[in-house]
Image 1 (cartoon, rainbow, N blue to C red):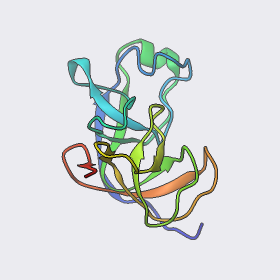
Image 2 (image 1 turned 60 degrees about the horizontal axis):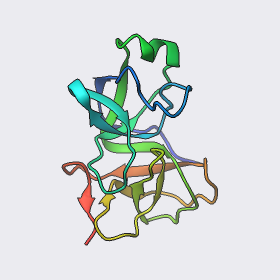
Image 3 (image 1 turned 45 degrees about the vertical axis):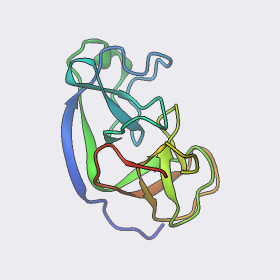
Length: 140
């Protein structure tokens, strides 16, 4: 892609020591996260729940398990995101239960942002303009 740098508002958030308990990979970059217990972050697990933002870095599982890991989370601006399926440029996107983004489609789900390019495959990286709202705009 011919895109330049990504700009936005990032903030460091402490990572839940049992982050993404269904995987041993630790924190994976460009996944959607939510606020968890004790003012920590965890991977987003529901498309109808408020999103905090998009984590910007990988952190290995051993460091996460210490309970002292801090991850950069993009709250506003443009962020890379991992796609969960094909997405058309301009489409509103929401989180999946695996912290990926897909085209927003279902009443009651939260819109995280708008896709800035078209991607075709699960696992592709897509640039998303994040919607600066309280956890995403609710789909009507």
